[in-house]
Length: 177
Figure 1 (tube, helix red, strand yellow):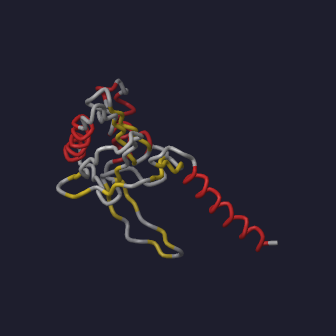
Figure 2 (cartoon, one colour):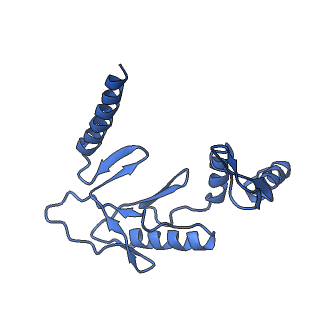
Figure 3 (cartoon, helix red, strand yellow):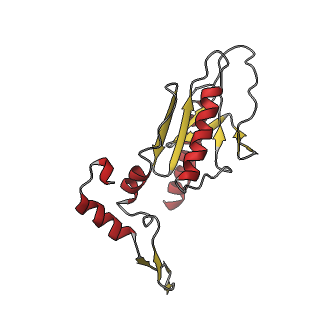
């Protein structure tokens, strides 16, 4: 953190907070045994976003056609494929996988999704993306920061989901009357 220009006193304060922290869990009226932790920040802690930002500050794209978007504990790689050359995008994913290994981050491949947006007629089929020999699920829509994005870039999926959610809440409000 000192390399980022963060003062030593703040670095020491963060290190003290994150190292050898006593923690227990309260569930109902039951309290677990207290254990000492030296990893991560407590969930819901105000320092967690800062901690994530500091830990991932060097997770940046290698290609100017790609973007890496980080929010809380989610990371999204957005790549532009031109002239059917998917090398930069695929290499970016490979480098992100390696970055995760090098920095002791767990990459949950089951939650990882691939979405291809291509408006050409009869677009060539891209082979499935694989991470550690596991195929990544290709989806036609996905949730990104609370918004449903679909491969056709229309608002239909998002509007439908919002309508369903609002109908559910209206039903509950009606029942409360």
